[in-house]
View (cartoon, rainbow over the protein chains, first blue to last red):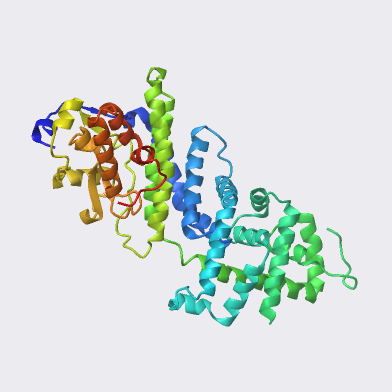
Length: 191
Length: 268
């Protein structure tokens, strides 16, 4: 544009909201949510990816989780056991995407059948590919999905009560699920 | 928990695991210990379960700990979206006299947030690319609300040159600083006008934002197409200039979808 137009200093700012409009409370809350994100993003990402969500999908779910957390706290709702809250919301949001995830898994299975997976594994992958690791991984992957979820949540440090709340199971069912899964893993290690 | 005779039976895996996990009541734990002191079989099984936990943890760590992408980009995206949410919340709780315009803004911001999730997907899927810069695909509405000159439709449409002016380097740096990416590689971004000067947009920091070149779907070329379309409509008398400025400032992607009647960018 020529200087005749752009040289003008008279302008209006569209839809602006200044920082002071937001208030210190919301800014502090933003920082708190980001701090919680730094603390729990990796465990949540591992949990979601451990039962089949592709990383981009899992990242997307986690963004939604922390936006929901912001709104939850902004409305003055309970701050009790935020770790459990985060896993529960992540779990529920992830379930809503199950159909999409299943499609991803099918696509990956097809890619695997086509030999499209990276043919040159990294040194870490080569280590994982040891016979024992492969066998254990196969056993874990063959577990029912709910059992895998219990194991993953327990591996992320959640107690039985928290797992029961997240997965909407009884305490006894959590305990039974974990025992059943570990028994299978133990059997595979005997071979 | 039932007390078991050594000769009769042993503890189940579930009971052994609950002991390992510290999930037994104090009372049950005493009974458990009494049995375990006598029973090698239960102790051996308990050890097998403990080994299975160790095996699972090893598999879990190797499978899922080493493959996580860095947290920088997701954190930056979250910050942007939180800022937008804060703006929405602030607008909701402010004066009702400004309701129609502010409500529209809030809706647009919410839509923008959803769009940003889509952009993020594209970013994550290109993990092999450089991660030395933060992915900024939508402007932060607090930093870049858009700004327009007080110019009439006739004045805007009389301008023959619709190409954006290059933003001075000093101003580009200021934009990077505002967005918390002061050390950013300039080649990774186009410092873009939110409201294009071709629609009366101002050379003002409120109207500039670092559009990441990593944005592959809703990129600068797509925005250019929208700007051309809106200018045609404005200058053809089919759209109010102020309305065009407002729509592109609120959510340019939503505006594109509206005026191109599509959910995704059309091929050039």
